[in-house]
Image 1 (cartoon, rainbow, N blue to C red):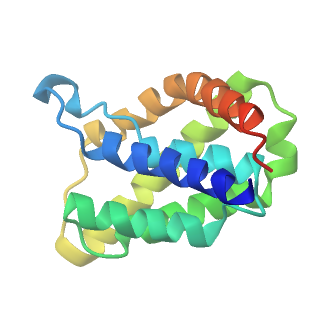
Image 2 (cartoon, rainbow, N blue to C red):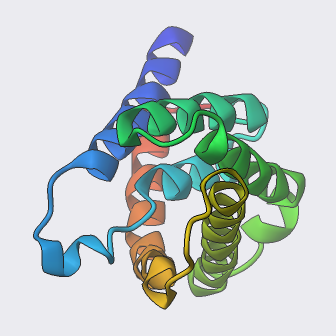
Image 3 (cartoon, rainbow, N blue to C red):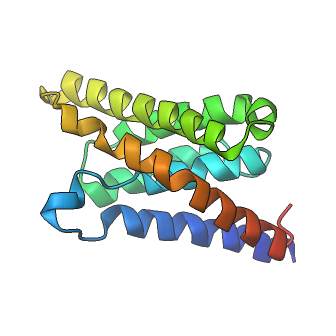
Length: 159
């Protein structure tokens, strides 16, 4: 049963990566939530011994490949955000879902700013306020992702 648990976590991360590259209309594409980050934050809070910085680095690396960005940019930013979440998982677990959503928003903002800073350093990217739109959608998305993944974790007895 332990192997199935790992497969379910991998499937949720795979679905998050697919949602991160799925085509969207141009008008709403700027608001695309950080699916991979939100799913990684959930698993790192729920199971910090199973999903950790290494998982975040690998997922971020795959996201770099899928998005065609400089290798390591998303991986490093995601690893740092998941490290912060995993290091404080006991505190974050005690907050309400909406308080956790605010924390996810702060982590998503940090993630986007880290990605921008690294891209600015490497490629002279220009900052636009629309770069932070996914932060708002990630905050709004958190309660539903949290409830869905918690139900999956309990149903499949993932420990």
